[in-house]
Image (cartoon, rainbow, N blue to C red; front, side, top):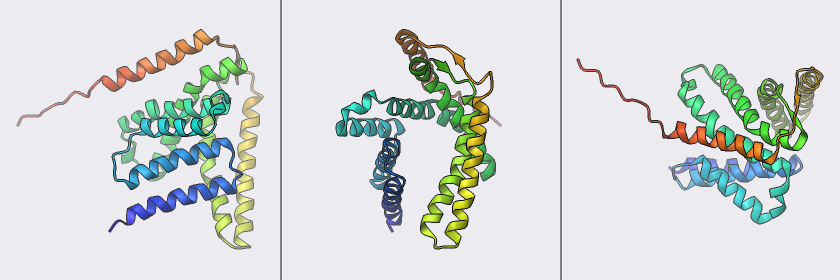
Length: 229
């Protein structure tokens, strides 16, 4: 009884352990804070609301250091997560991905999440870096897919003794090298990006359009049908 609560506490503790071991970079800390908020919500047996969780995370991070607001990494992380919550998660549910086998479900979900995160960050990237990284729509899902074995192998290497840990580290390095080769190759393509800097007005218009589309989709209720025999 109550074992699920201990599981949430253990997951939160493991998350912070990984954050410290990996160097506690701002992006990792943000992810750890958000995951901890989620685990705390589930620990209280309350219904989880992703928008509330990311909003609480943003508030906590800005209370800790208000300068995060001007950090492009922080901005991209927040926008990407909102894109995943607003578009990727509903689309995955609408496609009923859960009916597929685990491997296919994981692959489809990773592709959808990568595409939606890229679309939501495009205006911000264009405004700050004067480029529209079109190739990111293809590369980002590949990065997500390869991130799972890299992180999984790395965590197992921390927990297991040698020589098993050494083998796992070598495997993780090879997967990471493959990922770097894919990203470097994609960056050299002539169609990888379009040089264009969005103005503040254009960027605001894009995100206003995104939020309008989100609001309209969320307000549309599925039609109910009743079959009479």
